[in-house]
View 1: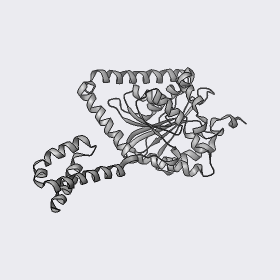
View 2: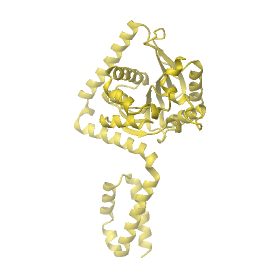
View 3: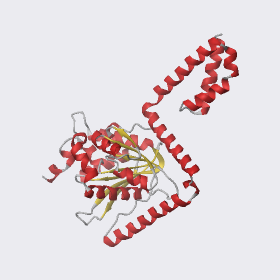
Amino acid sequence: MASAKRPEYTGPPELFYNEQEAAKYTTNSRIMEIQTTMSERAIELLALPDDKSYFILDLGCGSGLSGDVLDEQGHYWVGMDISEAMLDIAVERETEGDKVLGDLGHGMPFRAGAFDGAISISTLQWLCNADKKSHNPVQRLYKFFSTLYSCLSRGSRAVFQFYPDGASQIELVTQQAMKAGFTGGLVIDYPNSTKAKKMFLVLFTGGPQKLPEGLGGESQQEKNQIEFTARRDKMKQLRGNQAWSSLDSSKKRSEAASRQRDEARFQIHGQKALREVLRIQHCKLQEEAELNSLFLASHFQEYVMSCRRDLSVPDEQLQIVLSVLLQSSYNTL
């Protein structure tokens, strides 16, 4: 059977994409070209405005080839993949985005509304298989789509290039996506071509929207490629000429992206780490209060400034917590 040759039927993705397979994504120019082309098309289907940078989730990011395309277009990204070997390649290549090792079927570990969009290249079909006795494709797909819906901002899109194994698998995927709250549908490029045919699942988080048109014959392909190239060149020019490309604006963009990444990481590492930070500060305050209450009063503002500098805690929250803790320390004297 032809389906027996499909990679997802040979074993779990974390085993299939071993070191040998992962190496192909940095040495095989044909694979790299295909991945880049499909990534460009997926980003095009996100329909992001050209005048700013966005924070994108790359699902099944692999060696970071799709992340390179996001970088080229001025966006920031976080990638998630189940293959440690593929992520090792992405790290070796020094790709820009943060990488998370995880199973998409377990859901997204990010805060609500963290991302402005999501793309996925050749990954979605892997969730349709039961690689372990505990795997239930229906439950895994719903868990994936429902948590993805949560971590996307409203009005954004998620675009999946995938290789479904027949109509039943397409129905399985789309049913779970719609059940999770998405709208949208399939966009098929070159439906009459055996080699060029590509299928994209385009999902919306903000209610009914017009589904993009698929690419047609060769003339249509050339037309869309010209339009896409023109938009990409325009964005490069904007990055070079507009005010936000200045040193000061670049620093602000970098700081904003860093805050977004920190907030995404906070969902993973978050409350426990924050409680520990505040516990340590409380102990310090109590020790200093016992030594000299007048010293604390005269140096309170200086202490707040040092905490703001050394901790990744918002100013307002730091002021409130330190004020409460300081008052409690005074009351013990």
